[in-house]
Image (cartoon, rainbow, N blue to C red; front, side):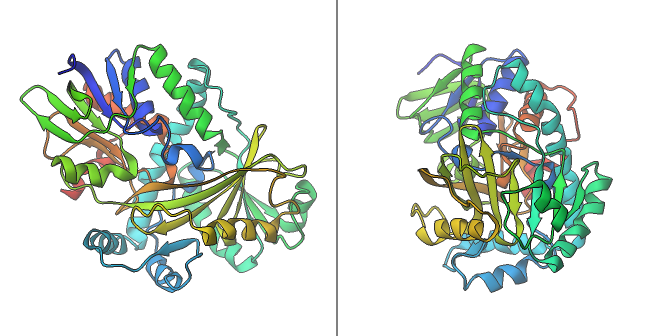
Length: 416
């Protein structure tokens, strides 16, 4: 048996590390148990955009019909591989029940609250902890080549504006004058000036350094195989022995349902949404800020140190195949919009699983079956964007402080 700890955190991705740092700042002792290497999951290869603009959930009116059409198109932006999987179809039915205007609006409010709080705290964390992650407040542009798609998307802007998320509509010709990296054919763009970007692998590495500098412990290659709760302690069993803590936070992202089944936690209704990215050296003619090539669902992020194409959503379980068809779709989509769609040297092809909750709202709060176990998972494609707000909320809840914002929409007990 290892020496007892104050708070154990399972998961060394962006949410686990942000929660650890916020708890350390609150005066708690922390040990992080990571099954592999810090930041090796979806924290590593995502596009690194910080996007309050993404407040609208995936569960929207019309999403089910669109998904059914795309089931026959393996390289579609949103693809559900047909298969016999009770957990998948239970999740899908719950998701479908949320694809209505009422839930879409309420979920947008909940997501926007967490996104805006995180966006407010992020530059403070970058400065306070010296996070060298190429953070820049450049905004994100959504670029359209189809005027009808642009018109449809514009209907989301008034609800976002009511939530304090500003946008600017730019005529296609004007946008092309501003942005020489784009090919002719742009019908218009929507700029979200409050969005930002960073390099996610460097952000996570910086969080890990800050955790260690603050006295936190990080155990890598330490997979949790069992959890047992006593009256005042929680024990996590690993191949390296048992670890005990007064509190335990589950921040295992897309692996949360597997951990729940293996350890007896309450059911966690998530599905792994597989995303892809390709990282290159920076091309000579690159966009000035992150852009979303909307019709092709391709995100383009440019840093001083590189250039990345990413996105897509594939529900294929925990399939570990690097799907060439979907990688090619990223480059093919970029070629429609950009003069230089790829960089001169390809550095990495990557996939990772995002934890998609059945209602597309994170689960943050006490586990329904336990007094000393907390959940911080289900952030979908927005783990980096929601990281600081989640960390602060976890610290508030675990420490018994008055939360900075209402935690009720994120409570895991809504699925109990």
